[in-house]
Length: 301
Image: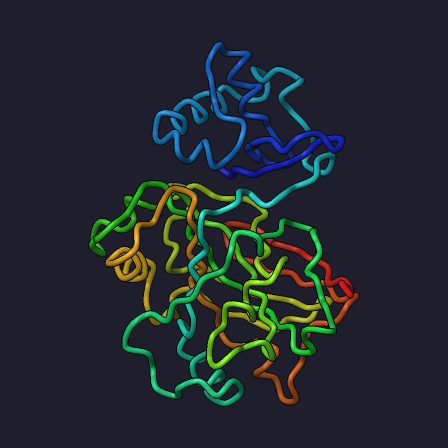
């Protein structure tokens, strides 16, 4: 399933499933079938396999069985971030070419990290499709982009082995790991990466069963239509299962938590000369099988 959060006519945010160019409201669909489904994606994830089975069964009936009030054209709704994660765990230096790029342009270690490099982004950094990335020139002149595959956790995970890791995944999405490169503080990245709007997320969450091999997905990023990043998740230094095992070795991953699995090379800081986002720019992050997450950059002073 391709699940999303949307509003219609500025009403409250609701949970929908994308089917081709339609959005099907799952709670309305369930009510018409005398069943029940949550109104939001986080509650849906927490409801577990039973909710997913119910939703799949209702959707499988096809458009002829769906009540008209449950169906909207995709271009008639406004998409929002799929959910507000309890925590976002970022992974730094997880593509080999990006390790070299960062050592040259950001003064990071030139050697490959022996363990995943982790950092956090607060939930307040999340913004949705077509929502603005805030550029505050009083805080940064080095606003950068990073297209990343996002892993959405479906079941609590603590001390999970690599072999068990995929059993704890709900699905996959896209995160654009926005960074103010000039706001690192004594080597710490939290403020650099955690400001409001620095975690564009979406446009959908695709359930795990729909992605045949998440370690073989093309990903790319464009700024104003010009390709800046282009790679494949097969080039991750630490694959998804290793990331989940490493993080859960000392930290409980909860349903709805998001792991941003790292960026390939092609970030603005690595360009010669460096290139950074400015108000008026448009950023498009694309991951195969998921879609494109588009965000404008706006002046926030």
